[in-house]
View 1 (cartoon, rainbow, N blue to C red):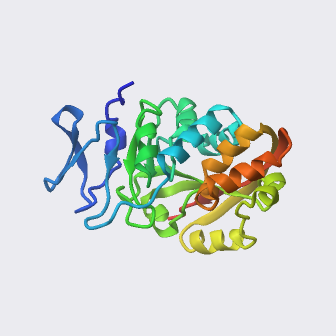
View 2: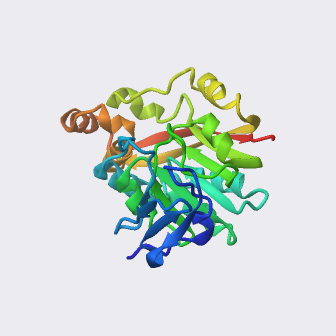
Length: 284
């Protein structure tokens, strides 16, 4: 399946990583050209790479991690999260959405299905994720970008920014949100995946995560509200392996250690999915 054409309203939100000026679509959709003449070619898989000059491509999810993410999300285990995210984002009828660290674009595509007049951009460090995201929705485009650098977006370009289990650069998020725009951020709660963290030796949620989140965001954005979401997923060993393989745990466990730990699990495990969803506003 070929990637959809670059949506003009999504392109209008982008900024050249060299000079920060606006882009137009060049050569019938083969790439972009900015007002100062800098050109960016579109990859044959459909995504764009917009990194600041001299910035090395960030280390993003591997092809295997992305494939695991696609399989796990497609199985519906995180559908309650996607629904909660949709409900938080669609309020007010936003027209330009940015999914920062958005991976394959799974969550954003679902939100866009409920906002027929909106367009979206998926920014992620992984070129493998961007290849998937380029085909996630006809009104979204995918960009390889670095969340810790200046984002390739114009000031005030976004009505909503989504961040799901991804880095949060508070200053840059505030810059790209329009006045009155909102950030919707999802973070794991302390009891997330509680039943398998110990048996599999997974990374534990930082007990100071809430404080660190506030320190990162609240100098730039005002908290609006927070809700906790909890549900239980029935996962067989294969699904548990896919879950582990799609996230940061995959970088800390060798396949041999993980396989041995999985063999000691029951054939089916009830796993707690526990996340906190926070909403922040740019007040000025």
